[in-house]
Each structure stands twice: as structure tokens, then as C-alpha cells.
Length: 233
Image (cartoon, rainbow, N blue to C red; front, side):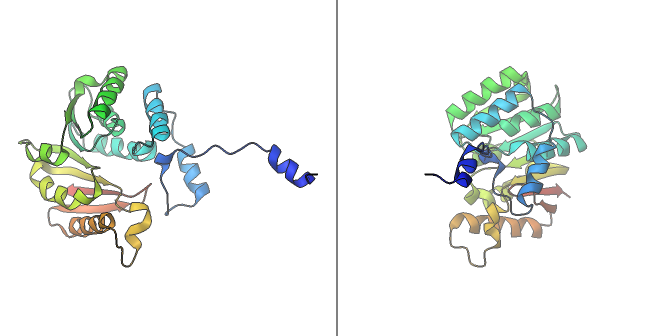
């Protein structure tokens, strides 16, 4: 016979799992992190659907807390051109497109044609397709081909490529523009004394090079998995 204590415990509803795009946050305690997300305004139908799809299919997106920071930064510098390195299903791309306005331009890049097609459908539904240019292929190669200077370059490619990205960015970013990079805390692994994996080493090298660069004034924000915001001098 089961004890009353066990019966009570089993009758309690299961707590809903957090979406995986929330990531593992080392900088704020669980309840504080929950509070930060609870304060966010409800997203529109398309963004909410993208969040659900990303969580269900384990697609990496920045999530709404970081996306609002990205959009706010774009609005603060009146950005009209954004180059995005690594766009997946276009979640952050959509936030950028909303920020740059009808006359702005966001360049989406991803190596997966299926991701790009799904992103295109989301953009059509959100009414921002005319602001977005989709490219399928190697994001670093696509950036290296650019002749113009952008207001914002957002870096969210494979982490081992981060040091290479830094070498490409400065000539393609206007003075006063922003170079923004996701995942710079890498679930706290950057704090390990002697990391063995190549990915963590690459992020550590990137962070060091970015902070030491004479081209940028850099601040690292401990939100979600870490966001580096670098101002082009």
C-alpha cells in the first residue's frame, strides 16, 4: 500500500519543462532567470511558433530575452543594415527586420537549405520578406564577398570559426557600428582552467582577441549564454 505522502506527491501536476533555448544560465539563479523571462511581453504569433518549433526540434535560437537586446541595440544606433552570420530558422533575423524598418536590409545566411526555406515562410507570414535577403552557403565566405559596410554584424556561426570571423568583420563594419556575438560564455566552460575541447578554446581565443582589439570597445553581457557587444571605433 502506498503511503499518503507518496499519493500526495503523485497527484501534484508536473512542472512544464523550460524550452531548451533558455540555455543554462550560470549568472542568475533559477527564480531570477524565471522572473526575467516572465517580464517579457508576449510575442506575436509567428515568433511564438518559431520558439515552439525550436524547442521541439532542438534548433538553436537566441530566445526572446536576447532578441530584445539585439533589437534595442539596433534601434539605439538607428541601424538600417544588418549582416547575420548563422541564421538557422531566422528567429533573430525577424527581430532584426522589425528593427531596421521598411527601408532597412537584413542579410540572412545559413548552410542548410531547409532552414532557409522554413525561415522564408516565417518572414512571409510576418510581412518582412522585403527587408531580408536570404543566402544559403558558408556564412564566412558570404561575408568576405561583401563590399559595403554594415551598421551591425551579428555572429552566431559554428564556434570554432569565431576567431576567423573577427578577422573579417572590422573592414565590413562602419565606424560606430556594432559587432555582436552570441554564446561567448559557452555554458560557463570559458571559466574552466584548462579546457580540452577545441570549441571552448576557440571561444576563449575569440574573447581575448576581441577585448584586445584596437578596433573595438567591447562589453560582455552575462545574459543567457553570454552576449559580446563590440563598438567599432
